[in-house]
Length: 225
Image (tube, rainbow, N blue to C red; front, side, top):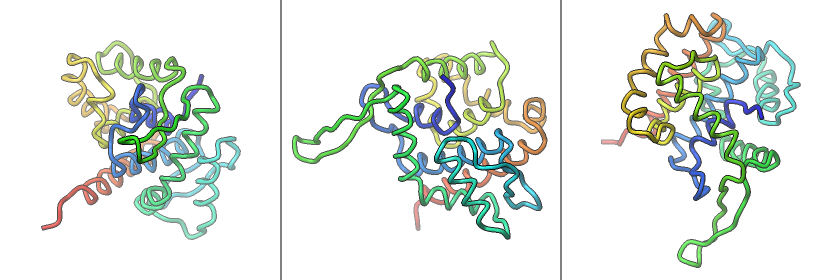
């Protein structure tokens, strides 16, 4: 079962048994925003022209979040920066999360359950029904960290998002893999290493998205003095 980058990122950030996210909305929502732009780049739907995001493909992915994002970018004729779209998608990330969760339910990967905190406060959780697709993603990126396989573009982008959104410990539960993950991700995302995996146009998007996402996360988590 093929998962897009947004779905992969969401599953990594979701506790399989508890069905609740292991990170706060700052990291989660900025991660969604970055994943949308990088998935569109992989699909050749957008590119950077004079530091502005420009649509190069039709909204025909048959995935609501991606097609709505293409239309949103297309509707602003003058073009906007990656940072602008990170902020825009972040602002709409709650709705994006619900759409992606429903897609994963429809695919039989997650299920929706209602619960109560202290038997009073209602909440909804999304435990895993079919762990196979997520386990394949986890195994693939673990093999990359341990130098057993070469990364594909989507793998590199997922690793970048895991790093910037501080999900490394959740993504790599083995102590051995976790100890190696930080340095390995840094090495994989150096310009020379990226150019071996990503086309130049996609690499430009990747670099811009990661810079904007890192900036957005830092701004949201830096305490005011």
